[in-house]
Image 1 (spheres, rainbow, N blue to C red):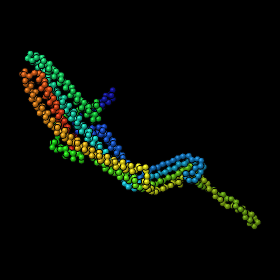
Image 2 (spheres, rainbow, N blue to C red):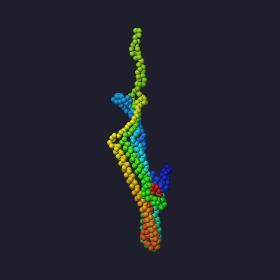
Image 3 (tube, helix red, strand yellow):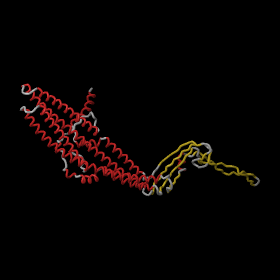
Image 4 (cartoon, helix red, strand yellow):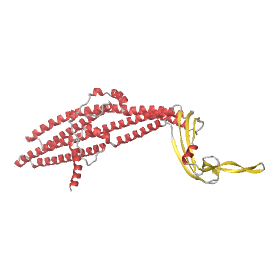
Length: 473
């Protein structure tokens, strides 16, 4: 029982701590950059490109391979240790260490490595671009959550006003100074306000769910964001965010533009590497080897004997003549002795001159040139899109600022109208329906002002983002 309680406690404590700490924009952006799936995919692609660079570097290092073979040989065949024909059945084993190195290839290996290096830098720039896109999306959702949360507070104030009006009207209806129709109209307005509150809360929850998905957070995990006052969010003066000035900064600082430039440099090196395959190349090679077979024999010793080779007559007496003879003794050659005796070495140079390879090399060069042309067009299109986005963002920011200023004046006018309507209603000079109309006009004006304010802030933040200042609230 105690172990179960401890396990439950270990699960609850992190969730409690997670819920107690509210999320600011900086924390949300940092978390998204570490956990967003798109960022992770870009990082995997960058690591894949890093392996290509590592391979390009290793291609410049000499190669080496060690092999051995073991088999049974019978019938008429060549003895692997003597290179003579034999019909003896034997077991054999051979060893071979061989390798080579490219000595000169007109810069093919060098340019391949440089191309891979530029491509890796471009991949890292892609990761930064993905992070920037995620940061911009996080800021957008963050502001939407703040706006929907403020909408809830505005609707709550509206409900309190409706309740106060309802209570005051009920007292007058009970006293007989107002008809019951006024009370029924306020009941209907209170119901409408309650429905608006439910809608505002649902919108807030949906925005939180969308932000959870962007951050790659469990949907069931507690999640709450900080609520900085929107009027306290710092904004640069619009005069310092002129589109032509921002575009010049963005071309030099945005990761997408950096990636395009790096890929063009990599493509130029790839062309040089492809052209090198049309030229001769010089390489060196080496080989070490040895063999063994179980039927190999060698002299292991000898034995001496005396053999009669004739006779000699001395003074009428015949004597036998003997000569010493030595006979060799043979035995199987030991394993290590065979490897040492049969050890062979070779070293040399190879010159490869391409003559005809079904057009593969020339087609590869043409493909490399077309790839470079396509990358240049991609760069031009990206710059054109960037410029269009910046000018559009500037135009949207100006329009949002004007709409926000207009909505602020609209709220001021609606507030005055509602205050006058309330005073006239209290003295019986205005109907309940007219009061409700003025109250709803004020609510709509406040909600519109809130939406315009957050929209204006976001449009300005987009311009600051293109300027290279990142996302901050």
